[in-house]
Length: 279
Length: 272
Image (cartoon, rainbow over all chains, first blue to last red):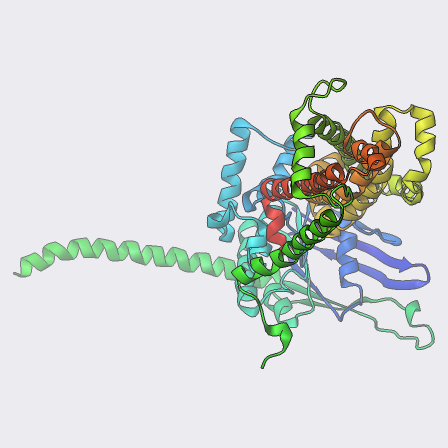
């Protein structure tokens, strides 16, 4: 269970107010997409959740506890670019997190532990479709493949929340579509909570279960910096009850299909002697 | 008729064109030398190839009684040892201080100004201080190289550490890395290729300091020999020594470049 709560969070740089009174909670296994115009503070919102920046007022809670004051392993992240280490192979990149956790001094695991980690990493690479590229360096991969790698690298640590900062912004439309499918499936499979920032509305409503718009509702022409952005719209794109009933329906259909298959198999066996009797 | 910038020489033509100025320079020297020797057979300013050969055969072939070995190899060994020690210690200082100062904000705030100030002091201006403080032996020569080269290396390392994208550092933290682990696995591997490049670029300066220090005081060394035989106008020794120093510098540079390409295969991919 993961619950994120923003409690009246403000972010100010001196006299410049970026975000004002951002207040919302996010339940477990939601896919929150934050949209808004450029430069309005969407990324600041994400950075605060990452603890790369700290709120000026208010606080951010993860499962009821204030988040750590620096980035930690409970919040994974994928940026638009530079999320992978160029000096490690694809496999090496994915194996980094657990090696750091398991070996404080050397940052390397050996023997049986290494082998089991290697198997885990390969399984994950298989899942994101990079298994045959395991020995390449990131520079040898396309942009979409690098983002797949960045996701795999973040997921091997099993973070509570996965943060995506315009992760598909630099991709061509084809790889963007296949990334949508992958992220959607991973979100479903792993029952994760995802918070994504984007300025692509289509993407937002396609992927998100909840879409939050950030904008500046008030403007002072004499001092534009004195009013910050806040959540101007909070839209439940795929309500939980609908998702649950769809899941239930899918399971029911699957069960029904299996039942019919089984029933078809039995008459087919019976039909064979009947057919021979006809001869 | 295309624009001239659109004409590209073939590989053979490129080699031939590259060799042409060198061949012209050698030919010009030989002609001028011949002309001078025809006018005055005792001329020492532009010796013939045969004189170079004779002088070098003497320096390479004959064991010098004080050095205990041929002077040429003795000089080469002394100079390379000074150069290697100076550059090696400088590279170690550059790497350790550069990574720490570049990566840890408090250290950066503390040491950035003093490193900047140190790198602006002309090293040869403090050579007398080094001679006074460390004597006329090897220590002051090696410290001269370090003084001249290390501050620049530290600053270069600081810059290349700060050129690592912020995203990578944040990502490493979300994967649970400590400061030490980030230095070990994220920062160090990415600045090592740049360290080798910095050493390559510092080779010229390091040679300058070796030869300058040897010119003032030494018991041997390539620079020492050149400045010693200058008194006798012995161009037949000076010119081959200059060629040899150039060749050594080229070989060191080439070796370092190959080492970098071999040890950091990913670095070449980045530029491709």
